[in-house]
Structures are given as structure tokens and as C-alpha cells.
Length: 422
Image 1 (cartoon, one colour):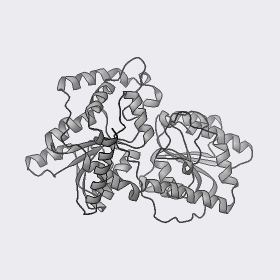
Image 2 (cartoon, rainbow, N blue to C red; image 1 turned 45 degrees about the vertical axis):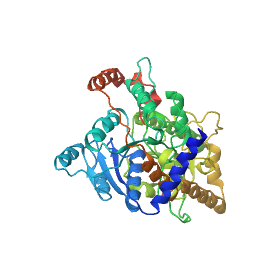
Image 3 (cartoon, rainbow, N blue to C red; image 1 turned 180 degrees about the horizontal axis):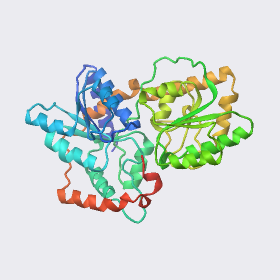
Image 4 (cartoon, one colour; image 1 turned 90 degrees about the horizontal axis):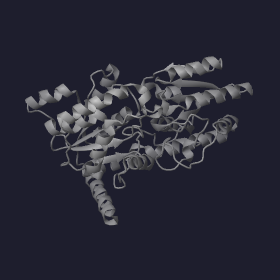
């Protein structure tokens, strides 16, 4: 086993050396959902940097309902296709020479990636699956099993280890535990964001402003406890205001809490935002509360981030994001110490100008660990070493049975709350 790990690390090293010679790859990025979330922005950044570094990215949208503004943005980076385009290009004998297919997909979209996109259009390409969310493949239900879980396990037990990417070790271990499989040889490639190479000190900070950006789903249910805490702090004389950006199934619950506490004059629900507006929204905030990509993106601007915890309905945080180790961005970690948000909020609020400036600079420095300069070469190496021969086929009758077995799960109460939305 040690020899296998050594050989794989050696292969990555050799690949990095090849990239110094500017060898390029043709990479097809696949996106299923038409809305913006952390996985979409990740794929977009990967495509952007792939082009910048001399590779040839292409983007395939499996859903035609993509917003016009997003479509324009992607087209500014690389060619964009929809499924019908591939059929046309094949008939014209004009398909691009794709070598690697990379998607963060699940369910039918994942199966189609093998049965249609690879098998029909790009049989010589490697399919690389990204695990960039703890809930992408884990589905926990009440009394009615998900048919997809069984199929995922069959796929993951056969796929070469190097064709699976994990965002961090916590997500990898969680999937190992759930599927009872060994993913230890699968590489870690963290979330990547664009981070300035030099830190620029922040100015005009509103010391009462706290911001969260993210979908309002049970997986991210830290909003309600924070509203309750801020109501308590307001009674103590503080003037904090909370700006919440995002939509989702918890919206009504959050509105109810705001009304119950008569907090509408200091808790603001702004709804969805354009990705391009993120920086301006958080730029003057005292601090940011969140998880995943958004806490890295706020930290890159020097905004101190408090790391929320997935599926946690209590006033509990792991503390400052810059104090965390590794590539974890809010996943639940058994035995890890948590505490109330209050002392951290008050630390930032009462800190001197120099003390607060240090919090800001440490936040930027932490974000640098996820920068393109540190992540993309590893990413390219993994794509280059992916197995191109592996394929996976699900018979039509079995696909039909999976769809039938899914039908009861459309009744949401059968799915445990934390596993309904990603």
C-alpha cells in the first residue's frame, strides 16, 4: 500500500513537471443545476484558470434554464454546449477532442455522464467526479431507502481511486463511513478561490454589520440561532444588524423568528444576489458567518469569518475560520470543540484598530491556502492521471426501476431534513 501511495505521488510530481512544458488538456466541465451555488462558482473558476494556464476548457449545461447573465459570463471564458449541441456536432464530425470530463453531479445526471456523454460522444475521455459537498451522495431517509445510494456504492466500489476528487479529508471519511468503502487513495483537491497575492488593509468597516450569504436550507440552519443571539445582544445595548442573503426552504421559518422577536429593523432578508455583487456586500462588514465557499471568499477580502457548522441548530461555532486547520469549511467533526458566537462577535467589536486589523490580515492569509496558485497544479495533475478506460453502464430497465423507487421520496418528510437540500 505504501508503494502504491508513493507511485501515485511520483506520478503527480512527474505530471507537474510536464505542465511546466505547457502541455495542454481539453477539459469538459459539466453543470446540472441552473442556479448559482458554491459548486457552480468553483467549476467556473476552474474553467477560467484552465484557460489562463494554457488548457482548453469547454462547458456543458445539462439544464437549458440557465440565467442569461451567467451564460454570458461562461461564454466569455470558453465554448458552451447544451446536450443537443453534442448530437449536432457529432453528426458534423466536429466534436472537440475532450480528454477529461469533470462534473459535480449526482443521480441521473451522473449516470448520464457515463451512459451518454462518455459512451456516445467522448469514449476516450476520463470521467472525474468531484465530492465538493458532504451531501452530494449521502441520502438518509425515514423508512424508504434511496435507490440511488445502492447505485452510488456500486459505482464507487469499481471506479479507479484517482477518478474521485474530495474537497477535504472530513468529506472523504464521511463517505467512507457511509458507503463502507476505502477512499484513502483518492486525492484531496480543496475548494479554490481567487485570492489577492498581496493583502490590502480594509477601510470604512461598519462595526455593527454582520453578514451571511448562502441558501436557507436545513443543512445550513445556523441563521435562526444567530438571530436569537443578536436579539439578546441588542437587549444588552449593542446595535448589531444582520444582513442575510439567500433563499430556500427555511425562509418562512426565518421570517417567523424575525416577526416573533420584532427584529425586522435589524435583521434584513435580502434574497438572492448576483455572484458579481458578493464582494461589495461583505466588504464593509465587521464579520461574516457562514461555511463552504462563501467563508473563503469573504476571508480573501480580509473580512473575519466565523465558521458555522453543518446541520447545527444551536448557537455553536468552531470559531474564527483562520484558526481552523486543513481544508475543512464547516463540516461536522466529531469531538471538535465548539463555542457560542457571542465571545467572537464581541472580540471583533471591542478590539482596537490594530487588533482588528490583525484579525483581517489573518483571515486573508487563511484564504491564501485555497488560492489558485496553491490548488490548480494539483488539480491538473489529478485530471492528467485519471483513468480514461473506466466506464459504467446502467441498463435501461434498471434506470427505470430507480426512477420508480424515487417517487415516494418526492414526499419530503421521508427524507431527513438535513439531507433534503444541498
